Image (cartoon, rainbow, N blue to C red; front, side, top):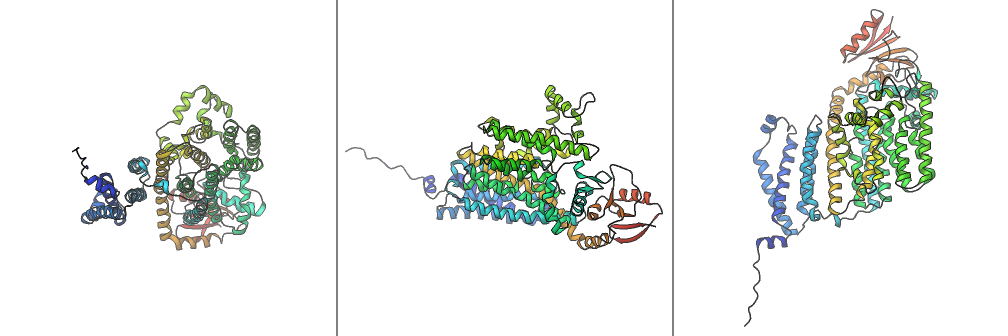
Length: 601
């Protein structure tokens, strides 16, 4: 008789695989429960960076009970339900939650600490996306669901950031620069139609003598209705949030799936430099992101007339917005081969910039702010031609100025949240769109230009996000899933790290000073509108209704006597400067908490 074949013995591995378990998944289950233990400990004590405090407040017994029981429970549920994605999805969720909690607990924003978190997130994501353990391919999301998600994100972010950014104003933490100039400017626009201020350069002038921004008039009808600086803060948050709809439309037009579209909507809502910048006053720059993204949508939709209209709207934001339109026009010409439309856009940008430059020069004494590029002036020469010569004929100097220790974190903040996908281009010419980051941010030595807490990132952010959406179309399989998953996690983590301290500080200040600030507002509004007033830096924005108002400290002239002096006693140095000028010529007429009102005798 022939030899009968023997069946291979059934191993433990075979038995486990039948129920979607394996050695890797069991380890992952216990790692997930280990992280869950951290999450629960963090809920009881977020002060993880104070080792002694944290050590004395946590329960080691509870921690290990969660780890052991949680791991066993995950394996048991997977065994019984045969859900292969349960452990990976639990692991990715717990990792994300823990990353966000670590980021929110750290009061000082530290990009290197966040890079460390990102490395752990990357290791987890690499395991989860391999062989599609998360079963993302099985998930189908319709564009209708994406639209609903966009609406929900728009409403949520608008309300959330309108409220928390408004606390800064209500707490008397907005200063003359750069909020007081806009509160007075809009009040004057509502009264006379002209964007005049007395605080911007310490004499009555048009704001267009500093920056040519006709786009402000689009805000005027709303201001006429609400007539409050808080309207400007809320309108700004709404305008930034509206970019979510542009992201939805672009993704749909590019043929990206519902899953990818939803991911980019979340990425936009949490991209660190967008809503974070709303905590610093009111600026026209913050309109750039939404306008540029809608412009891209009309470009790829090949709607010529609306494209040109949006181009003009972009230019109306500020004179240097021409830089963004120039590179977008070159993209249209070189990458999309739309020569007529691109040439029209390019011509518009050059002509408009010349006009805007002349308007600023005719209305103001300084012209456009070329002093910010003074590092590139050669042999006493000033202006664009001198800067051009410097960067063309001394590229080494340009690189030395661009790639410095203090600018490296800025590069990380802008590109890491998107996993550097803006560079994943089949058509290298698309990278033309990233060029504005050089003159707007990296070339500058003025620290605010390369800081995501301020307003100079919004135009570049739109270009980076659009390049990421195009770049993701060039990625396939697990690489694409990894890039999107990591981008969502990183945006949530990094945004939390920069926004949470601001929310925490504003909320604490409001809880301690809410009644005080209401009383101060009533006192300030008793000052006659037609009297001249000198006020502290953080008081001035609340005196926006005064026709002639000056601020302390004043960067453009010495302090002079006016009808009223309003002193902020929280800032002793400024208060003393004002008292020195008042001498004995003023009498105290009212006082509420940290604000004193003096009237000339």
